Length: 478
Ligand code: NAD
Picture 1 (cartoon, protein in one colour):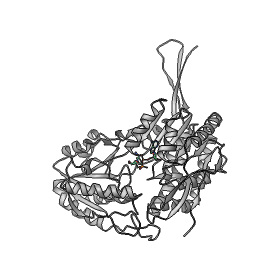
Picture 2: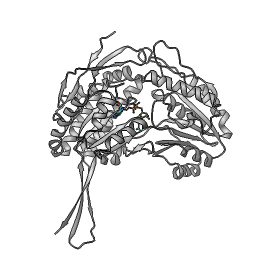
Picture 3: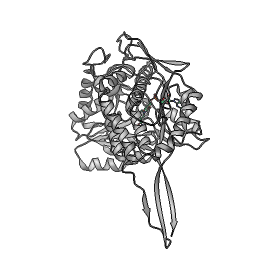
Picture 4: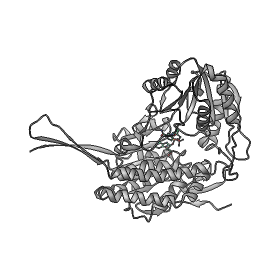
């Protein structure tokens, strides 16, 4: 077994040793992978000061040069897919194929945002006054704090740093304490590509120490956070003193509506994918199903067969594994507890329902629960595991009403061959995104944003880019 790596914070263009460390483990084997800095206020303040010093010069750098840097970085990531994917799989547990997709998607995302960075446009606005011109400029916010979760740890670095950097901001990233290694590998590859020092910084540590030092600092102009509702709420409170701009990408409880006229092969395949990909730990994937009565029995039978056929285990020990472990013991215990609660509340276990005994890994059997009701916790709260609860509905109106009746509002989906039903769903589903006859997977050209407790603001596309700018309106009388 290889020796654990010791990583260092990346501050002001240099890697620096830390006094205290956190340990990072492989969730499939519990092997110790690395030691990373357990940073606190002192490291965070130095990183923010470096980002502040660098910001004006970076903003004054021509957009074409800022974009060129992101293109160079994208090419470098593509040259290192195998190493990066392995790092992600080791610490996060996703299967190797998905880890490779994550790295390649990240490189494509850097290219995409680099292209947008050269197309930032202001506006000239018609005035009511004679002889007056009104100009709207878009300007960088300044220093961004990017706080990351563990489920797509690598892609989320780019989702925050690419729009921040191409619009002329600088950034301090704090990775999740579960998955910091890939972020330090990202920094290692970035170092030496010619980025001015201080523009991109990485500081690892716990949420309570490094995270809250970032969110409470007056040196931060925008907090770009992806993670749970609970932490998002704490961050809002912490940002209140300085009225810091917030971009919050929080949890989801995505409903999937399956109507009698659905293509069942498509629906079963796509919804099963939602629960298996990344071991069900994806904010936008279908987490609850409303199936119309006419196809309910057939749907449940086919879904149970497909879920129970899933091969799971340690992705690095068996290349044929389709699903890896959950992220940690707490994640595994939460899934097991929520399934037990659902059964006590009257849900019928169709398949799965057990912690799988695969030596030291945090594995849970792919699980289908039928006979669920809207008031059950499993239909309302995020499970973040390979568990699919199913409730029967009589018609689309009922499905839409139940789908909307939830504190989360990130994504939703519907399976139907009727254009009329699809259009009704478009009009009446209250969500940031709806997928029609297709798996839940957003495109970088879209706008990934939730309503209700799923967040504030969004990411991707032109709208996501402009989240990292502020408007400056100039009135010229001449
Ligand atoms: P989490 O909220 O536990 O942690 C996220 C990050 O916040 C970590 O880096 C953590 O250290 C930090 N943090 C914790 N407490 C903090 C504090 N007081 N101040 C500042 N930072 C603090 O979330 P997680 O378990 O890492 O991620 C899973 C959650 O993320 C799920 O709810 C999932 O739905 C959500 N998620 C949402 C999206 C989206 O786009 N909406 C994408 C991925 C994940």
